Length: 406
Ligand code: ADP
Ligand code: ASP
Ligand code: MG
Image 1 (cartoon, rainbow, N blue to C red):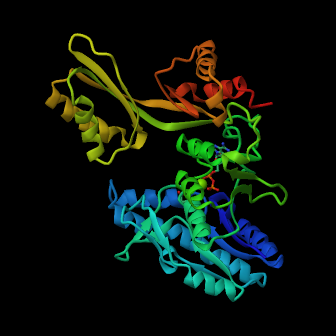
Image 2 (image 1 turned 135 degrees about the vertical axis):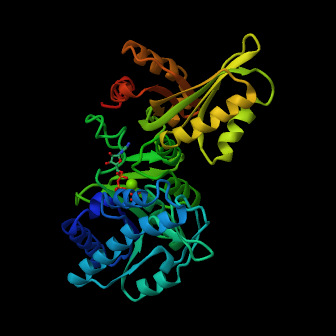
Image 3 (image 1 turned 120 degrees about the horizontal axis):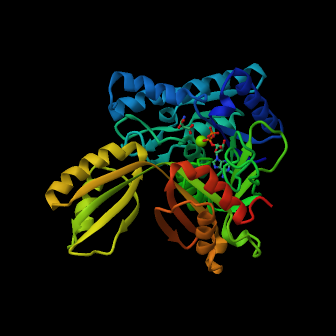
């Protein structure tokens, strides 16, 4: 007998038929004698609908109240699944994050989980029930409802698995595992049987939304056995996230191509080239709670320099406004921006021992006439910023160049 945490994403619970399908899958695991904790997302599209509703009331919704609204999508699914299980003779009980007591900090809309109270869950499991927990949500120390950021149900699932020391955390979604790149963009993408935590962290942080990055961080930190599987297939082992040592020594140099459309670039031209410039520009951006990704400061000439960085596209206008203020203060020449860019990245731990990956990547893009606007590298990834119109082409070309479709 094992303790398994299963997380089902939005498309897997999109309508009553699919929720019944989830109930049947859970029932099969119960019948094999396993204890099952299920974490569910809202029905697909629901969270977007709730956010849109909130924006009709307030252009920039109050964060506490926004969380009070968006958390409701998950609550609906927990109750429906509990009913679906009872209807086929499986005892089950639904919980909101607050009822479990998934304690988080108070950063509304992107809260972090601090601890999880296991008591209720253990008691119900021992009584033979399936426990169903609403993903994506928690409660802070003052009793306010919080949410964990888009895609946050993955993190709820992994955090519960960690707290309960579950034997496995299974993330059920609409693809049958982690692929070499998004199979919706490159149909030739191949499913990976395993991927290392390090690579999965990079893929997630560089835009592969199949797992929320925090869920991967959690799984790595607490050694949760994490697997991605399809809720639409009965067969298949999915993709297991592993530690590097487990991997075959003969691993490919590049394991996957990740991409993110959600990017924007800002440039301050003609900034006086003096100490403290980066701090003055990026300090103002950080004070506004805007995350900065890539940063480039050009070599100065004639006492001035140009300074560029990228932000999340949703924060483009806000960042631009801040830079206009900084421009006045610094006496810089001009602020320019481009919110039609994307980032494409090649990821692989095998890169460490293979020089020349970057030049191969740059050549492949050049051969297609794709201009690279920014570059950033680490030990196991190379990212480039491109005009958004090249995204699909660049992903396909790189996927082929690194032999991932073979
Ligand atoms: P869920 O609602 O189940 O959480 P998501 O839409 O958040 O599902 O994540 C699954 C989607 O992630 C897939 O449908 C796929 O389009 C996308 N995706 C992006 N990159 C990858 C990848 N490398 N492997 C598999 N899926 C990926
Ligand atoms: N329902 C939330 C979202 O759409 C959380 C999740 O599905 O993981 O982002
Ligand atoms: Mg998701």
